[in-house]
Length: 132
Image (cartoon, rainbow, N blue to C red; front, side, top):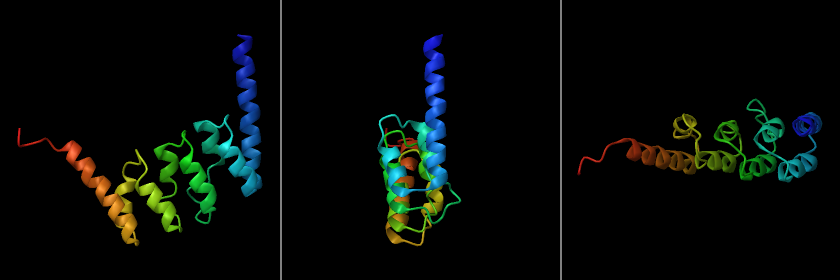
């Protein structure tokens, strides 16, 4: 029981630290936190720029997308980011769901093609093999 209380207290302390860092918006600090071994999905979600932050730093977003705990839900936040390379990363990210359909009509050819390939591959998996 004491061990779970200690973990919860530690998690709350980390959450506060990450939340404060996100509020400050210091790029070097945020990149450092993304790279920290204690950063899990919950903490990553706290410091990952919001979907409303269209001007979020592309370098930070690439670090977020590189993190092993990054989920499709977090990656999907950046489907409309101004940086083409960010949108391309999102188009190739696993488990991003319906965002692929939006990226398939992106202004950039590379993003459109990557999303279309993923959609085609998903369709191939969903369609039964009629040759059997």
